[in-house]
Amino acid sequence: MPSITLQELNLLTTRALSNAGACDAMAAATALALVDADASGLASHGLSRLALYCTHLREGRANGQARPVVSRSKGGCCLIDAQGGLAYEAMTLAGTEAIARAKSHGIAMAGVFNSHHAGAMGYHLLPLAQAGLVAMGFTNSPAAINAWGGKKPLFGTNPIAACFPRDQGSPLIIDLSLTEVARGKIMLYAEQGKPLPPGWAVDRDGKPTTDAKTALTGSLAAIGGAKGAMLALMVELLCCALTGAAFGFENDSYFEPGNHPNIGHAMLAIDPEALAGKRTYLERIETLIMAMLADEGVRLPGSRRESASARASTEGIDIPDALFAQISRLAA
Image 1 (cartoon, rainbow, N blue to C red):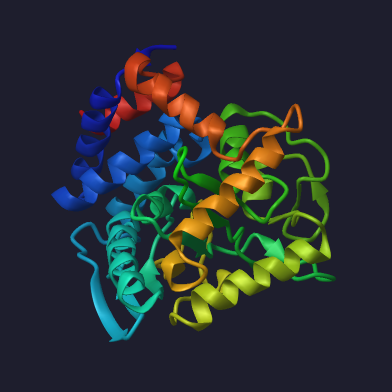
Image 2: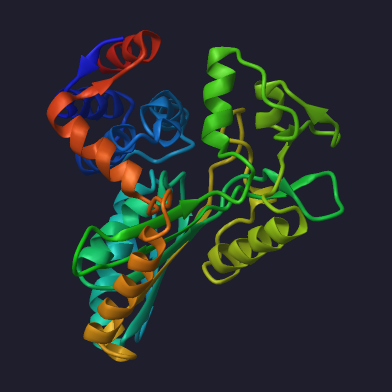
C-alpha cells in the first residue's frame, strides 16, 4: 500500500477527471474535494468515487463543460443551477453566495439543483465557519431509504451537516448520513467483496441482504427507524421542493446505467451577530464544549478528521494498491 503525497494525488486526480472530459475548473475543484476526503479519513467519500465520476463524465451523465450560475436571487436567498456538472464548483459558488448574503441579511440560504453527488457535506461548510458564520448543509441523492412502513427505496441517504465557528479552536463539524451506514461504505464493501453486517440493508423486494452489490440498488436502513425516515423526508423537501431538483426516487442509481442526475443541495448560513451577538455566541459554544470535554472519553465531532488531515499533509495518504492502480490508469 503506497503512501502518496497530497500534491501527487491532486495532480493524478485532476488529470483523470480531465481525461474523462471535465473542464479545468471542474477537475481542479473535484480533485481537491476527493483528496481532502481521503486525507480526512473519509475514504468512502474520496478517491474511491473517482472511477464513478469519470464514468459519468464519459457517459454524459455529468456535463464536464458545465459552469454553475445563479439562476434566481431574492434578498438572502439564491438558487444555483449546476448545469448538470459535478457538484463541487456549484457548492463553492453556493458557499460564496451564502457568506455574502448572510453578512448582509443576517441569514441566508443557497439552493442548488441540476447537480451531482456532493461528497462530504462538512467540507463545503468549513469556509462559512471560517468566515464566522454558523452553517448547515443538506443534500439528497438517488433513492436509498424506504418511507416508514414501506419497502421501496424512496428517499436518498440525505446527509445533514453543520459547522460552528469557534474562537479558541477549530470549527465544530457535525456530518452524518441518515442511514445506519453511509452508502459510500457500502461501495467499499462491494469493491472488496465483503459481506455486510446484518441490519444494514434490504434488497429491491424489501428482504434483508448482506450482499453489498445488492444493497446498492436496494434500500438502506434509516438511523433510528421512523425518526430517521422522517428526517430523510425533511431533507428531501428542503433540497428538492425548494430548489426544483429531482426527488430521490426520480434519480436513477449512480451504480447502474440511468438518467442524468438532478440532485438538490441546500446551504444555510447564520451570522451570530444578528442574534445574541458574536461575543455571546463564542462564549456560549465554549461553555458547552468545556462541559463536554470535562466528561472523560468525550471526543468532539470532527476532531479525528482534523488530526488525520494534519497527518496527511506531512506524511501523505496510504492508498490501497488496487485503488492507486485504478487512479493511475485513469490519469494515464
